Amino acid sequence: MSTFIVQIIIRQWDKSQTTQQDSDARAQLPQCYSLGRETSFYAFDKQCIIDKQGDDVIGNRLRYKQINDETIEIDLFRLSLNTKQLEFIGHDDIKTSAHIVGSLDNNYIQCQYQWRYRVFEGGFYYWLYEHVTFNAIYVSTLDENVFINTEPDIMLL
Image (cartoon, rainbow, N blue to C red; front, side):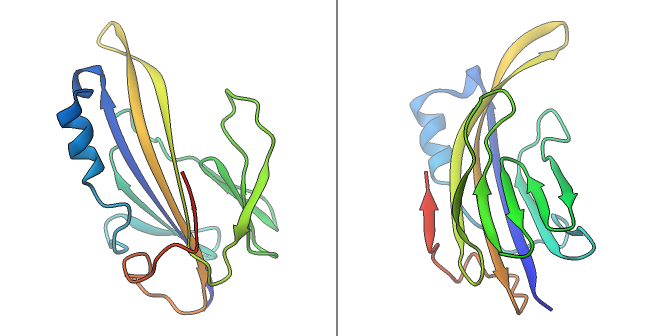
């Protein structure tokens, strides 16, 4: 059964973890994992497997929805179920024009970006920083190691 596989790896930290040593430690963490039984789930009538790895300090960090019969959105990206195209749509807070990243049809695409959030917790505001790695592919045969055994065809940093 053909399916989209999307793996999102979220690394989050606050200002107390911004030393060079902290940054170096984060840089050593993997940019892909095997699909995990505890971290993966089917979405959109089993048309997509979403594997969420890493941190989620504030909870419910991952946003995803089906726009219509042909389109799903996951985080800052839109996937066309018909054309298998991945499109970057950006963040609601920043006005960016959408652009096509490439075809996911047997093509492994990896996108990375950084972001920050203002968080109110315990009566105080603080900045929560994050680095996100978005791995995606459309395959005809499910392989839990698809991101481990394959190099990205397209990389956006």
